[in-house]
Image (cartoon, rainbow, N blue to C red):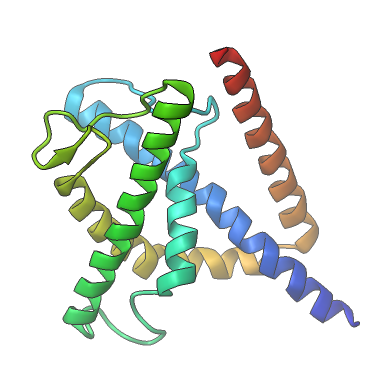
Length: 186
């Protein structure tokens, strides 16, 4: 096997891992800013101590795998408004399902309420609500249509050794963070 193929295979694995952590960090930052400006609170609603909300990275990786990107290379927004609306709807379903599964798991398994939409219109058990689901659809279309591809290309150009080291460090740090926080619950 030549080194080009080997590098391509390693990068094929490492780039999505790096994107997972990058979007987990961006999601955490977005939530921090939202709560600061909307409620005047410096809230951290996640489970990890690190500045990561894995539900964002995981949701975007799932959406990329299931739905692809909302626009094809060379298309301009909005090339096909109906397709973008359907993409937003499907993406919001994936994100809402991730919220529901994550919230239910942490609530039932550990008695931890990571967030609550109680008081929001059309909420269900405080785990999910319609306004946030609609917002997720719009935010995901923007993220996947405007940010994903440039980041994916930039990470694809990163030296393989750097990408592997960074991914390994982040995976170990997040796993330790999760384990420590889990132990602290009991």
